Image (cartoon, rainbow, N blue to C red; front, side):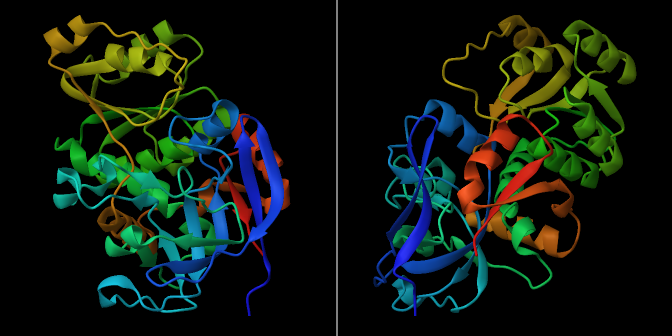
Length: 353
């Protein structure tokens, strides 16, 4: 028997959460009802909380890095079978399934994309329902028993990082990879980079996070207090080659300029993090032109990539637990957002009970 109310953190507008008891989502044919177990706080959530976002219309429940348990799974489309009372992760994508990107299986590039935690109520609530179009792309993925609820919620950001690496199409074994950003996303990219045999440099601004990067396996960490000194150090450490792959894993627009100045010839720069809309990014196109640098972007992932990410955690190729430094109840969500915005620790998790 379900309770009568759905305890939720409702985003009502910039810098405003309201803790409310909403109605439980109705059990409807073609949808899946989930009980949230944990939901991680993403940097995107914090930017939305502070500034709003063009695709987020309050009031809405944020949260897209979700581990949950299945409840109602009857009468699913295409006779799909999702066991009840099963722990799962959830792709946040709700594609239209009608555009040419969807036809190609590139659901994260859908022309009419909706997303759980952005345009559809997300995981900062006790319960959420998953629409049919997510189910049709196998967006609900059962997880293995050896994966803890909290680390399961980080499989979604891992899959986003993995999606970027799968799209690079450049060999990085024994090459220099430079990750600009020492937060959880940067440290996930670091683990993937080391799996591919790259010599990896992590550039950041927080000594405790850089120390964690070193423990994870970074070949060099660099405290970026003086960009010009950082540029010189990187060119010295890479034997004047620069980076073959540079990943911008921070929303600081200055990181893009730094990336261009440490990129070697015939290299690729991946803009991984979203940048606030009121920030201006300036680039020197001559650096791209004369050094044959490719400037690329990466957004979200697909359920197929999420499954690959889940398998990596199951096989203990990636350690997500060490990235979790804070846990909060839903009623403490303001604290979780303050911790995340202040770059204290690494990832904060909201646990539902």
